[in-house]
Image 1 (cartoon, rainbow, N blue to C red):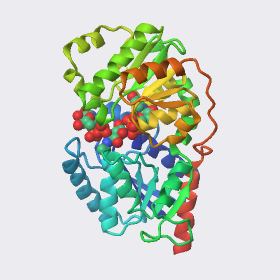
Image 2 (image 1 turned 180 degrees about the vertical axis):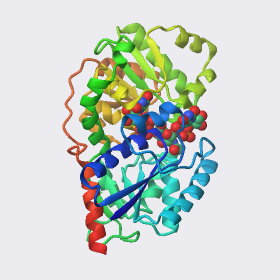
Image 3 (image 1 turned 180 degrees about the horizontal axis):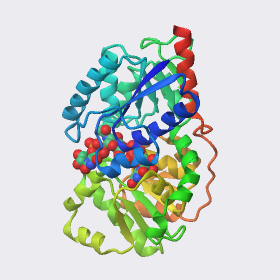
Image 4 (image 1 turned 135 degrees about the vertical axis):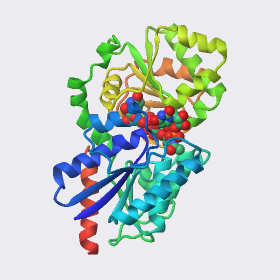
Length: 382
Ligand code: UD1
Ligand code: UDP
């Protein structure tokens, strides 16, 4: 039996973990045992528990309840807790997703006590080391034994950093790199129909198809800089005033906490604008419904950028660079940074434009590929 210990902590990791847990349950239950550790990085009901309930992810075996804090404090508390669990559980591999502080903590804890790391969503680079996520993902990749990349660009990034094509038996000094596609794509395909039948958010918000733009904002360089955050909100309000569209904005708690730092006049404009629909974070099934029926998406989220692509929506990306460069290359996404003029100009260009969305995120079976590779390696190394 292969024993995996999975670390989750932030919202997108819980969602990503659903793909692997579902696949283990369906196809590998006699070969793989999964232990789930929640670091507690995200803890509000609608940032954590809602996904376990809705996406049928097994209840975590452990919750470290670390909560929020500075990077150092938060990461240190996670390392301590994860190390203790790794020592008592003795898994064959630890599974880490993405690039959050929970990922970094798992990588440090496991690599020091020689537990091989499986990094899912490996190889992505923004080439901007002022992003906390860039540091986290580089550190995790370079201490991993199995690196699964969601895109070909991710695979090439690893080759450029000295990782080598696979040659058999893997360890931390001789890691295996695999291009497997995106587990988020697995999830979007799997939950799309379920969302159609279960979500009623469009009805609750009285939103007609394509009558709205879906927006999310949470990236720290947008939320923590009042000038950037003001530019974004001014751009959104101007789009509302010059088009027939509403803007639906499920607001991340980080961003909610920063709204009062905006100029008083802008705060009032935000509050009084009936077509700017600021709502609490929504469940994944609700999010899929909102994405599928939006006219366009404006976001700084990594996951939402991709889901815009999966559901064939043009996307304005509120960043200066992206790890998901394929979306830009295909022309369905455009980088607008937090630049008011770029937001407005790009909206005019992208609104109602016809884009193509060739498949670049795999075939929807990435989680299955990952499980097979891990089992195969365990057999060959035993
Ligand atoms: C984290 C990840 C980021 C990821 C995002 C997904 C890091 C460094 N960042 O950013 O890569 O894109 O999650 O959403 O790991 N808060 C709450 N309730 C919660 C969670 C957070 O109120 O349940 C508030 C707290 O004020 C907290 C702030 O949000 O200080 C930021 O949370 P944190 O987990 O540190 O970073 P995120 O911005 O969520
Ligand atoms: N998401 C959600 N509800 C929301 C906002 C986002 O379910 O209110 C989902 C979204 O569909 C995607 C994931 O959360 O699957 C993205 O997470 P987030 O934007 O927090 O982080 P990132 O992907 O940027 O790391």
